[in-house]
Image (cartoon, rainbow, N blue to C red; front, side, top):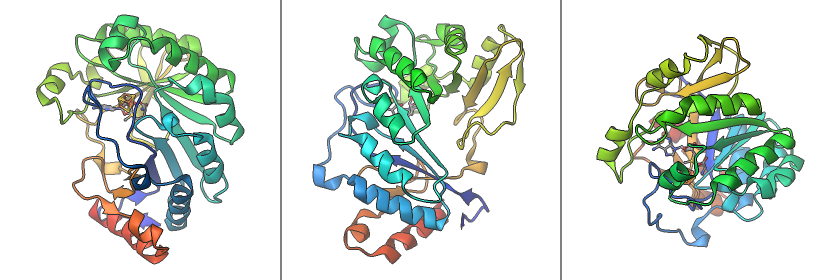
Amino acid sequence: MLQDAYNRKIDYLRISVTDRCNLRCIYCMPEYGISQKAPQEILTFEEIAAIAKLAVNLGINKIKITGGEPLLRRNLPRLFSLLFSISGLQDISLTTNGVLLERFAKELKETGLKKVNISIDTLRQDSFERISRFGNALEQVLKGIEAARSQGFLVKLNAVVLRGINDNEILDFARFAQEKNVTLRFIELMPMAHALKTSQDLFISCAEIKNNLESLGALSPINANLGSGPARYYKVEGTSLIVGFISPISCKFCFDCNRLRLTADGLLMPCLNSKFGLNIKSPLRQNKEKEVLALFKKAVYLK
Ligand code: SAM
Ligand code: SF4
């Protein structure tokens, strides 16, 4: 088992498979994108699976595949097939912006994948263009959500609420999620390095979002284990809707953080905000398994 200096059990690994994205959300990426890494810098699927296998031996039992936009990686379903062949890995999920999901939903389902988180910050065309800087992809995201539902995925929708941009859609999101019979999660905006002032202006707390939602019905906390992450879940009374809140700013959740992150180019990060990235790719490529294992332990120690 991996346990850190604060007695937190670390059993969850988030793996970014690419830095690239087909959107440029204002809160995540600069408009011009980010510099692309050379292909040989990026971990192959076999390398990711090898790291995952070692991590599972150490006590990791949940993996989330993320990005950038993970579905931009060619033949992503193959990675899921590799991961599903690792025994001891209990929970594998995908986070996507949904743009390419319609195309891949069936293939992903066939690998054994059951859980997909889809980010959708607005249901309106003009706001979609403003937030994602791509005007024409909303319809694709909506089709992606439908495709995921029709394949029987357990779907969670993720929305980052931005003051003055999509905060007038909170109730629309709730109605949409209820109609689609999916869980809805609101994520507080985290400050972005490329636009700190804007982040402050756009920030809106989960408490405010929750207040807003209470016009639909009282929100009662539920303890059901609906995920491995930091979301706190509530049921909207009188409806079947479950709403989760991820509050990295107003209600720090570091005390029960259970995860490490692996970047697409093979750095193991103790935390999203950590200055330390441990290069796990080099020892892996030299078949130095013991060093890889030692780096996992070091990353946990540095948390
Ligand atoms: N491209 C995929 C997507 O958008 O779902 C996966 C990667 S994205 C980095 C994962 C999640 O992080 C998304 O739900 C996104 O909204 C969220 N995110 C990105 N930047 C954020 C920020 N500054 N504050 C809060 N959430 C953020
Ligand atoms: Fe970032 Fe995801 Fe938006 Fe791409 S789709 S810019 S990775 S939040």
